[in-house]
Image (cartoon, rainbow, N blue to C red; front, side):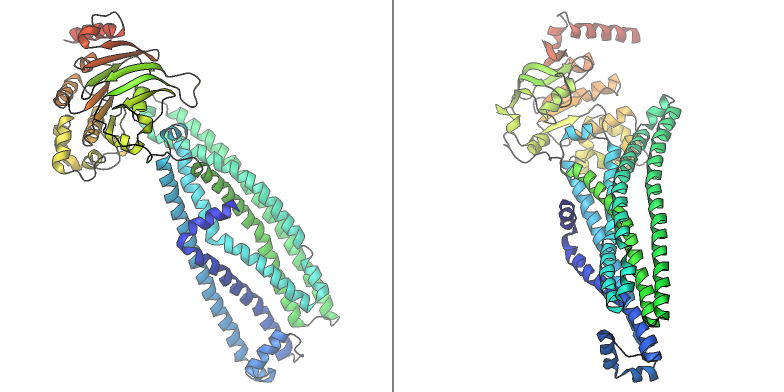
Length: 595
C-alpha cells in the first residue's frame, strides 16, 4: 500500500487518466472477447442455421432485424467486425497515449522530487554517499518505475479481467470443457508468484551492482587527470572490469530466471491449448459442441493463458519497480536539513568559540577539543597548523555544515545553533582549497552567488582576486567556457575565480580555506593587498600554510593535536618557541635560497 500511495501521489494532475485507463482496458477486453462470439454467431447461427441459445447473440440478431436479414446481407457481419476493430484500434491508441502521459509525468515529478530532496539534505549525508550510486538511483531506478507504468500496470488489469470474463463465458457455453480449459491456471499463477519472488531478489542484486559500476565510472572520469598523472590506467581498467563482470554475472542470473520462466510457461500453456483442442474435437464429434463454439474455446484459451502467463513477466517487472522504489525511498526518507527555522540577528559582530569540541558522526575520536578564542568585528584571523589538525573542520562549524558536539559558537552573543542556517550561510562566505567550477562561462561562474550582478560588479571582484587581467587574455574573455569542474583552467586560476565568486556575495564574514595555496607568492601578495583594503568592513579567517599570508593578520591561531597551542600576532609568535616559529624559519630560509 505504501508503494501505491507513493506512485499515486506522483501522478498529480493525471490521476483521472489512470482511473479512465481501467475503463478503457475494460472496453478493450470486451471487444476482444466479443469478436470470437460474433464469428461463432456467423458460423453457427447464420451460415449453419442453428438456433440461437445465447441471449447476447439473440439481442444482436433482433437489432438488425433477424438472422435471415444477416444471412442475406453478410456484409452486415463484416461491417460489424470491421467496426469493432476500428473501435479496438482507437482504444489501443488512447490506452498507449495515456499510459505514456502518466508514466512520463510520474518520472518527471519523481526526478524533480529527488533532486529537490538531495539539495536539502545535510552536507554530512553527501560526504558519506557515493555519487555514482545516487546517479544510478536518479536515472536507472526512475526509468524502471516509468517503464512499468508505461504499460505493465494496464496490462496486468487486462490479463486478470480477460481471464475472469472469458472463464464466465466459457462456463456458459460448455461446463466440462471450461473446467479443462481452466485446469492449468492455478499452476501458472503459482509459477508466476514464485518467479516474482526470485526476480525481486535477483534484480536487487543486479541493481546494486549497477550502482557500484556507475560509481566506479564516475570516479574514474572525474579523476582522469590523477589517473594519467600516476599512470594508473591499467589499475582503473582492472577495477572496472571486475565490477563490470560482477554486474554481468548478476544480470545473467536475471536473464536465466526469465529464460526458465518463459520456456517452462510456454510448454505448460501450449500443452494446455493442445489438450483443449483435442477434447474440443471429441466433444464436437459427439455433437456436444458446435463448430462456432469450438472456435470460441480455442480463441478464448489463448486469450486466457497468454495474458496469465505474461502475468509472471508483469509481476517480475513489478518486483523490479518495488526494488527501485525502495532504493529511492532510502533517499527520500532521509530527513532534510532545516535551514528555515531560527533567528536572523545582525552578524556584523564579535565571534566567540567557547570550549568547542567536534566529532564526526561516523568517527570514534574527536577532531577538535576544547577550542576557545574570540574574534573582534572586522578583524582578520589566520589559522595555521599541520594537516589533520582540524583547521577546516573549525570553519565548517562556523557555517554549520556540521554542528559542534560540545561547547558553543556565538556571533554577537547569539549561539549559532539558534540562527537560521540559510541566513547564516548567506552571510558567511567560504572559499575552498579545491573549488568546484561549473561547466559554463567564467562570467556565469563568478556571479553564481549573485545571479543578478552587473558586469561592473563581476569585474570589480575579479580585480580583487587578481584574475581580471588573466581572463581578458582569453580569446572569449569572460565568455570563455569552463570545462567540467574547471578542468580547462589551472589550479591558481580556479582558486582566484572561486575567490571572486565568494567576494561578490559581499558577506560580513569571509573564510579562505587554504584557498591561495595554488597561486604564486606574487599573486598571493597582490590578493592580500586588495583584501587588506577591505579590512574592517568584514571579519576574515585565513586558513593557510604560508607565514607570508598570515603575518598581517590581527590574530594568528596555531592548531596542533586538535587544540590551539599558540595565539598572537606575527611579531609575538616568531619570538615564541613552537610550530609557528619553526615554519617561519623554514620558509624564510627557503626564500633566501630561492633569491
